[in-house]
Image: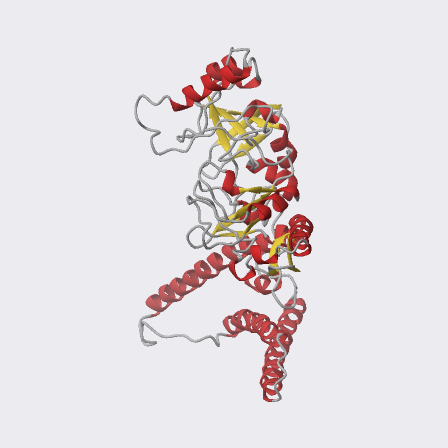
Length: 445
């Protein structure tokens, strides 16, 4: 056993020496290359990796030999019992420190492996830099379906009144929902790979058992449907589900328009209301020409998120690696979008150029495509998926009358982009890729 121990520490000592010599060589190469105006960008990144390895392996070696920096709180001439106690306190403090470092380092290591996080230049796994923090304690943990700490999947939950839902839609699995239970839409079950009997666990600790999977339309294409009497607090009133018994279509619409305008408590004076028929769009969110979050996931993939500054979020590296694309598009220059948006966007801009309408799209006033942030409701924006572009930003701000040319709108819609200028609260610069139904959708109110 002693021979194995000496061999391990000899390997560690050699690794420390190689890391230090590697750093010196890389930094020398970096400085020298700059003198001849030829920078080698990967030297800085690799030298940082070697620095991390040298520090943490060096700490282990120094603690082993007692060569680490120390300071004495108690003189060496203190009584022997006092010195024994102080050594015990020192040992406990070191154990607590490295225990905390190892615990959090392991969580970081699992996150980096699970999401395939890579260094920007060398494109090697970031876990190579994290591994030294935990390798002496545990190499890795068992990967399960749960996400690392501080990461989560944003999930849209709609709460229904079972009795009222049944009065409009008819009998469904929602009728029998009780506390701790949920119904999934078919799209949600597809994304989550769940079946009845499986359990959803939310960040606040709430657990919901899936009782059924139903067609999207029965739950307005929500990911999770619960009862208003259940465990999850869903306080915001988002939609009114209604039907008319009038056989005449025009009269029926008039009935629904009057219902939408009915506001006895004056709570909707500043609200923008829109009404659509079920045969015009699959479901309604803030406008007829947009997808529900779960349909976005079906078409464009699901990503985990973690908090960033303000409304910005961090996205899982595996989704970014699979779908985030940077390319040049006519009129707009370099764009960052979802790979599914590149072809229709390029086709639309090419058509605008070929039809002699280039002056109608200002490439210098392009507001971008991919932007990992949330919307006002707290849900990820369509820009987080990289499927929306903002054109001619100046003069087409949210909430104001759009000024963008109708010819541009016509081309973009024909190539599959819904225009925000048709929303109840217009967003004239915004064009969003919507594959689920013909565009534009009819809007009333």
